[in-house]
Length: 113
Image 1 (cartoon, one colour):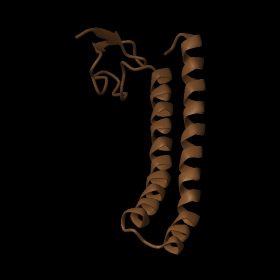
Image 2 (cartoon, one colour):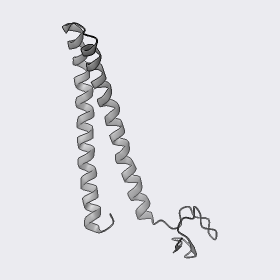
Image 3 (cartoon, rainbow, N blue to C red):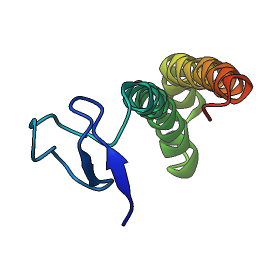
Image 4 (cartoon, rainbow, N blue to C red):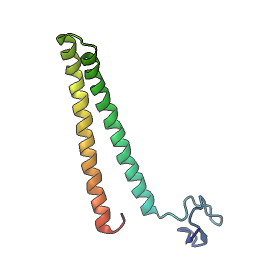
């Protein structure tokens, strides 16, 4: 394991240390910039989960009448709600991916990626 400098007290500590033994700061070997980048990436992951939570129930709502061979009115009733869920989920996912892509490009341009 490599030794790194604590961002608070400048003591040499292991890069995998959870806290600095000298000053007690959390994640002493990870810069504040890297922490904010990681938090932002976690936010993008959470946005994709929310998009999936909207999209996939919409798909299931359509597939149930299709596979149960329900009549046309049941299918149209299911379609009226599921199209909004799928559209919302897909739209949210696409916008989230565009935002994530722009952020990753910005990081790459700054040399922090």
